[in-house]
Length: 486
Image (cartoon, rainbow, N blue to C red; front, side, top):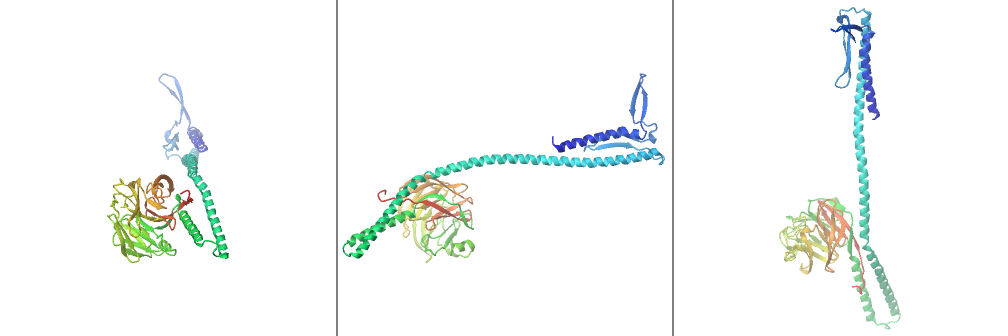
């Protein structure tokens, strides 16, 4: 039992003792005790002690105390009639005793109030102690869960790093290839120096062929370095919060270095106004923009700006339109044969996203689905000038099951959803016409992605995430293969 509870018990016991003392002692102090011999009908005497004054009207009557509903002590004292002489010594004693009783009653009341307050304090402390005990249990359980979660994360990270070992081995071979290029350049430099000293002693055409060959090989090497396999996506960088839940925004990957214009399209249908911001700074910090009116409303969020023109899917059709911003006219339009449209084969979030146009290091692409391919994704490489299909690839991935998709270095990457926990889990390479299932998580910060496109100039993913314009940096692994390996 706790200390406050012991205090309450002691106080209650004390109150009972005081009450008992008052009932037994008060009469004797004032001479009111009387002993009567009661004779029963049987003739036997029965001695009984009580407060039985000879003349009740001239005496004080004190009864035993009791407790009220709140546990307080109650004493009952009956005063005599007022005909008694106030100068009587016994009356004076009774008055003094009455004052003492009143003082004791007040003390008992104060003590009772304190007891009640202590009891309330104990009850509150009991509730708080139970709450602390519950919190300690929760902390202990959360600690165990965190340890298990951290262990799983470390194990998963090790599994991600394991496939990189052969990639690092290939980097060793790539370093040797670069050294071979360096040696050939040094040899050619030496030959050129000798040629300057002895004009005509070396076949000039052969030398030129070697230089041209080396130049082509170096360009091919640089082209390979520009591309790579996606291995990671950074945390999101929120550029701006604006617009509705759906939309698209982008920059031109073929624009000059000093051209940083941002193109902004709010909504996924029944709209034909494109905003042009002069720079990413203007886009982030102001509402100063130029508005371009398209001849037709667009469909979905799969538009791209490429080399000064915008490519978009005409609303409720499978027609692709190329609109030149400089001349404000349609420079080319063409139907994408057999492509589903008008929410026939959209991404899982809907929004008339049947035809998705995208750009990577290789040029312009269209991603869609057809009845002929059973609603699975079709990838088509497009000529950006004529919009004709250069080549198409059919995949086994249903278009309606894809959250979003984007192209990097000729490989289509598909996400498993558009809300909640999201990851890139499917990749189809147009270079080898093969696919694989991968696991590259990325943070879906605002819970609803309606546009996700890659910009090869910035090496970044542009996303429209529930009314937020967001950027993701990407990590690519570059692998250089020699001509004998190809």
